[in-house]
Image 1 (tube, rainbow, N blue to C red):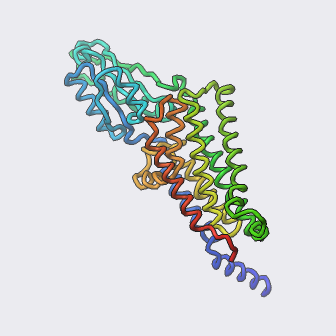
Image 2 (image 1 turned 180 degrees about the vertical axis):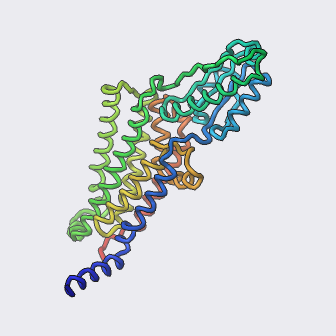
Image 3 (image 1 turned 90 degrees about the horizontal axis):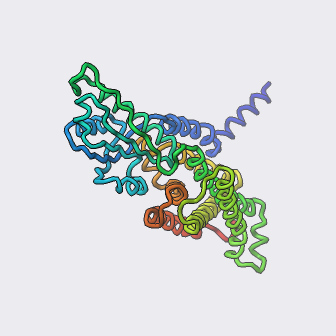
Length: 369
């Protein structure tokens, strides 16, 4: 019995001496609870709306204020004509556009059904559905007020809803861009970090360093296969999305592939940096999964809208590369926009790539200690 208790005591001491084990046992559950408690939310908060008011009367002004003061929406633009609808949706500055028809207030007061339309960005089906449902409920509640009409009951207005870019609200329009992002992170960052760390852990890195190859050639030889495999995966997913789901690339295919290559290079640089920091494969796996995979799913806007999260998570997601690549691939692939609409995100990814490569070069040690 004493031996058993001594063994148990030794295991406790071993666990509490290992910082990595403590982080996994106590830190990870806390982080996951906080993330899922705030991020995994189907509520709508501060969704961006643009308005095209062809009536410009007191009723439309009051209804606009009612929509924006509900806490679910915020107004980002007032449009001057129908030609501005596509522009504002392409720019990503509005999740939907509400269009008030001419003589809206006069027709409502006379008991007629005035025209009102909700044009949503269907490239994000979940958000588009929430926006249209919430806006429709607010509009219906407002127009049923007896004070708005001379009749005993107000007419029930059902807004005309249209979805741009994804009329049928297929979920593939949300998941395919995210799958491309996930696969590149998995193959590039995770596998590159494991490969290089394994060489150090098994002691074979020393054998490689005494070979005729230069250290730079060794690193490039290790990461080049993952670069090519990742690029093949991107092409394969694009082909499958066209043949299986009928989802073609609406924008420039060359631009999309070029942006994908930049993101692959960024992921490889992250993998090299992880391998330079990690001493064992377990550390590399832990850092890659917790540091890259989970934030890609939760904080990149892939599944859960960033607008619905607390402001601190918005700041955290702003330093994550997947957030910007998701915007790029959705704009090019689904909305059909050009480089003029994604140059800011591209510049951020290019800056991050240079920064991660610089850190990796600084941290990487040629000689094992």
